[in-house]
View 1 (cartoon, each protein chain N blue to C red):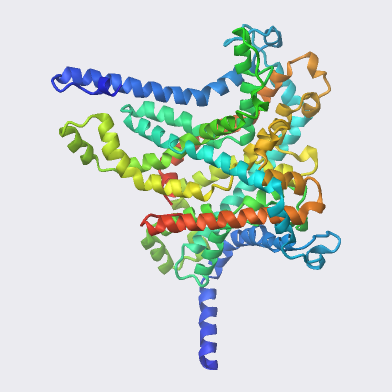
View 2 (cartoon, each protein chain N blue to C red; view 1 turned 90 degrees about the vertical axis):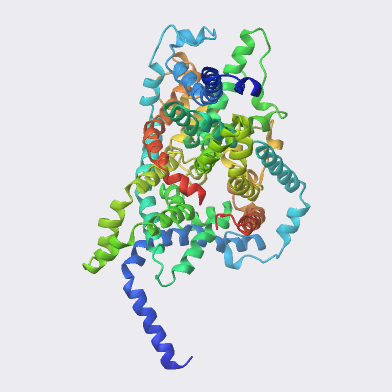
Length: 311
Length: 303
């Protein structure tokens, strides 16, 4: 590139930037927030490769290479956390059809007012915090004051300590998640169903198809692309759990079942000071990288099948 | 079941109708059952929270208390524990929401212009934050380095601009009819005036939706509070509720001079505090439903 061309390129850039100066100003707050709170922390990831010493700072702490990652892969706790995460994800995968079934049911309702009332009720839990959901769970299931145990006791039974029971803690977690997410999750399927050509149903009815046949042979095939996209996207988050939920449901008796990456990082990194910063950063980085790979791969699969992913 | 709802081929119009009614009632009942699981826990908590201590202590299981009382609410609403938490939640919510909506909408509008220099790169950088996060410890150190520990802005700013919101708003802005903007531009309307006087008024439903989402997410803020706030008196309502539900002696959390244990059973106090914390959400929920029912969110979920 000659000097003159370079100069004219520069001036054209300047002209283009100046033309949109106010536009950049509008976007500036958002860009600054992303820069300061999403990109700046990435610098601290160096910690995962050094023995971080707060007195020496990020740049002068001794560099140790992959030491923390080696420790990670030799740590039996790591495999426990990975296994727990996968188990919780697996159980939530089983409940994947729940919102689809809800959408199919809602779609069968003739009365618009009734449908709306039901929708109002089932969308509500999505807007509640995990603190509220977990508190409600305690009110229902706690050992002495819980409603369920009161019913059991008044029926002559013996109170059970549901919240401290290792064998059913995953069940409780999954029920909570379904309760919170089923209504909101059904919206995307309702939208897909609304897009189906009504003529198909008309034709099927004339051919003598009953309701169930219409659902199986028209509705489900028509929303199959949406189901596929949602399923693939769900696979992308298989290494992530709802951390606030798990943290709030943890107690010493079920701890080993609910030990997942974020809970460990929070309890050993943030709470116990800077001595574990490097190791817990390494754990977090492992999780971030794996989940990024999963999201990218699943999005590739979605878009290569001619469907629209999030990218 | 299927056999029952299927109309026999010989049946006339009347039989068809009857089976359709049975089918509708059947579907309606299943849905009512599902909806009941969402509503009944709240009703239970509300009823108990208004139950008089003497009735609750008598220990019998009941659906409708024989004596009502607002004692639990009076104790909670007077306690400094609640007032401190309310102040924190109000600051985070009402300070955070405008910042959140302005930052997202401004960035989204900027990115909705195709001919913007650097727009593609910035777009990529915004999307990347959706894919990769630095993690809990780097975020914590970052907040500490920025001097935001124990500041409510640590609960507001990190979530004030989100890639997903920006992308949805951006696609909304780029679908606005361009001729209005072009006409305004010819009339000499500047970028800022265009944004505030033409584009934003055209996007009110979308802005209302995201305003309500921001309100809810700041009101529900829990983890960033226990992570970044150190002063217990600065903790928002969600932390207050969690402490009340978990602690064995709640008089310390409620923080009031009277000796609570003699007045109202702890479980009643706990339920009353849940009602207080969830009340604002229940109040704005009908408005939210109005907006996301309009399809704004459906388009968003579809991507």
